[in-house]
Each structure stands twice: as structure tokens, then as C-alpha cells.
Length: 408
Ligand SMILES: Cc1ncc(COP(=O)(O)O)c(C=O)c1O
Figure 1 (cartoon, rainbow, N blue to C red):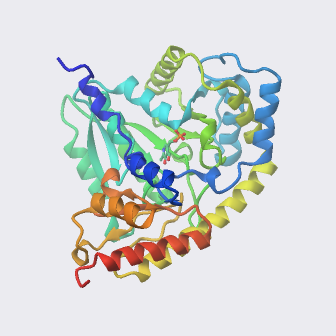
Figure 2 (cartoon, rainbow, N blue to C red):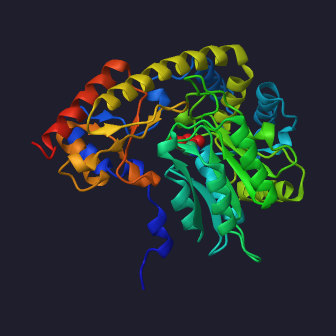
Figure 3 (tube, protein in one colour):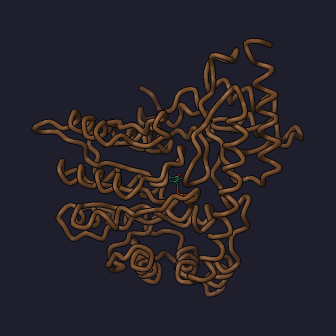
């Protein structure tokens, strides 16, 4: 009998699968260019008002367990945020605070997924969606972002695909969209979003929108929250401190469920049960995040600076990628990732896994393989580093491709 559970095979994170190789290189004195992890505070110092509020909470000894669903100050601040930004009325009771969106995703699957159940996921997807779902015995019913449409969705194809996964006695438990999307940078426009909401409504599938990059859009894109267009349709918004509030290591996320329909009430209640099981999210961090959300002026200043720096970095990376004959990319409109297609026919390299592994070992540039996001023969590049570093990394990638090109 195996010691580890069969479920343990789903405890994987593709973004960190080269950890050992990178660790070895760094210990040997190499300076590894880490373009694998979407970690804004590694490049944009976390805002002082957030840090000061954390220190204040610590000094006030707020290090006890919080109430499982979160401290009222934070739950209310989040509810007010949705009224301020998106005109959505709610109360603090509609918010369950989690240890990052990562924990909310585990809650989601734990709450809804039985062995053999399915959930709709849009591909390319954020890496953790699939193993999290499979860990709970679920399987994905996949819809596509289409690369030749600039990573947009074809809504008729989405509906056809959902129709196929619905039968008389079975249908997907939830439909999960990511807007803006990691890794494609797609920002769904209001019309497309409304059509997705309509599909969720018609097929009675619980809609979940991971909006962790909601304040990081650019290149003319306008963000619409599902909470604005799904009134009356059961839905949940996932978000947190990691990206827009530039504080990944604070580990605070939340599920916002503003509806009072039966599905929303039932999942809210189950999230509360699950929150009780793990006792509490990080208490001082919750007070700090409440302050960060409430300090609108300071936040607006910080996010607008970060957004315009990211826009420049992403656009520079896109330009350099598209100048290469070894890859091409769609220009993102949100988040801070690029997902170039590797021209494997020009390269003496088997696949994207070998590409990122060799690139790291030979050039000290650390990317993530696209197949981990459901995009074979692509690579994901995080464009948070300053422009000089992005340029340097792209030069190394180009040199690497030339060395491994079929003509070489
Ligand atoms: C789409 C998406 N959802 C969730 C997460 C994880 O968020 P958190 O740091 O809140 O756990 C990430 C992190 O990169 C992400 O890109």
C-alpha cells in the first residue's frame, strides 16, 4: 500500500517546477533573471501606508485568531470597495476573507466538487485551477481563448462547448473565468462578459470570476466586473491583496458573493464552514488590508503609477518578442504576463518544457512553460522587471534561440 495518497499527485505548481535548478544556479553565484513568478512587490516596493498599517496592527498585538470569515473592518471595507468601484450594493456579510485567492480556490472545489463532477475552465488558464479541481476528484470542461483572435473568446464556441458538457442529469458545477486573464492578458469586454453571464444563467451554472488583476488594465482596455453585469445571476468574485495592492506575501484574499439567491446563500454558508475549519486568516494582515482599501487616495496614486510602469514594460516585451523570428505574441491588455508562441519548427528543441529548462540552465533566464497553463509550445514571461532587465532577458532568449535554431 502506498504511503502517500493518490491525491498527492495533484500537489504541483508548474511555476515552481524549476526551483531546484534555479536554486543550484543561485548558490553557485549566478544571477538568475526571475521572470517566472507574478510577484509585484519584488519590483514595486509595497506601499508605505499598507506596511505602516501592518506594523500598527502588530504593535496593537492584533495577533489573535480573527473571526473565521474575517475581521468586520475588512469585510466592510471590501463591501464598500465594490460599491465605490462598481456600484454594487452589498454588506460585509457577503465577504469571506481567505489566505489568498489560492485558499478561496480550494474552498470552492471543496464546497462544490464530488468525484466525477466537472467545472468549466477557460484555456489557457491560471496554473492552479486544474490541479485544485482534480485534487477534489473533478475534471475540467474546457472552453478556449483563441490565439488567432488575439486570445479573445468566441462566444458561440463557448456555448457549444457548454452545451456538450450538460446532460439531463449532469452539468458543470461552476464556470470559472479570469478577468484580466493570467497568462494571456485578455480583458473581456462588457458585451462578451454579459454573454458569458447569460450562458451561466441559461444553463444554471454557478459563475466564478477571478478578478485579482481588476485594477491592472492598460492599452485602452476597460475593466468590467462580473458583479456589475450578473445581478440576479448566482456568482462569486475572487480577489485580494496580492496584485493590485502589491502585497503577495501578505496572503489575504477574499470571496465576494453579493447575491441572496439559494446557490449564493448556500455557498456563502459553506465557505464560512470551511473558514471555521482552518480557524482564521492572518489577523494583522487583515487590518492592514482594511486600511489599504479604505485609504483610497494613497491607493489610487500607487496603483496608477504601477499600472503605467507595467504598461511600458509589457509593451516593450511584446515589441521585442515580435521582432524575433523564433516567437510571436499577442499584446496583453491586462495583468503583466506575455504568452509567446514558440516557433518550434525553427528550433532543435523538443517542446516548451525543454525550452524553459535549457534556457534557465544556459542563460539564467527563468520562464514558465506554457503547457502548464494549457498552452503547449508557449512560454509565459512575467514583465514586471524594469525595462533594462526585460531588454537584457530578451537578448539572452534571442541568443539562446539562435544557438538552438535548426539553421545553426
Ligand atoms: C489568476 C490568479 N488567481 C489567483 C492567484 C493567486 O492569488 P493569491 O496570491 O491571492 O493566492 C494568482 C497568482 O498569480 C493568479 O494569477
